[in-house]
Image (cartoon, rainbow, N blue to C red; front, side, top):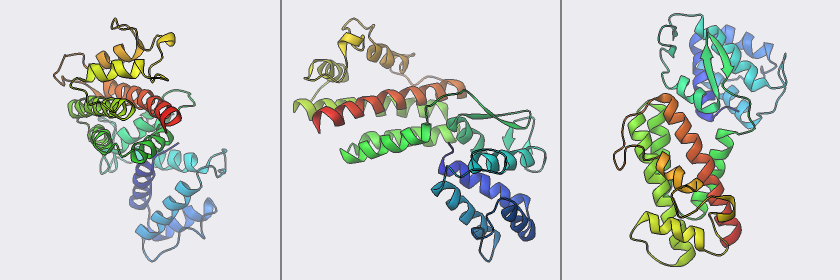
Length: 264
């Protein structure tokens, strides 16, 4: 539901908003008094974070998920405090990445409240873990480096860099998969993509209109979507970048799963 980075920023907010005594009271309220131990506030909130991350399905007091309940509560307390939240910019003063981390998790802040952007079974953080596992399994280190740089660029709000790294990630990944399958080195990424539609079994399914050789198949238009200004990165904004990073993650994870299933 929430990434490790999101939970850590939430815990730092909890620390900033509370004294030792009120953190202890907060932990007791949620039945975490045996978890929130330590000689300082940093140790206490770190132990709470570790417990939530390791037990993401724990029930809350008022809901079926303790992690969500605590995140929602901390955000509600923070957004009402002008020292910690800039309501004009909709930004957390000391943790400017947190709003974008929440956006990747599928949540936005509206009128001081945590709102889910859409109801979906897609779990960005779970998919990202699976993606990294497969990239590591096949030593696609360059592609993984580009993906991680894209994610980091998104977190700091550098949309053009995020776009550029996403394109580089997709290009390197598809080239390396094609090389692994065929044993050939490709001089153009387009040739590599064609090879992925012709290998046996194919990575791109022609019968599902994923590759049509006329620029209209899914993966053909997917690549065009990543290059709206041709070879130049071009400008972007937050909405475009979150769309791109989700599109790239879902699409390439499916490609990696097929490669893992058919050619492992």
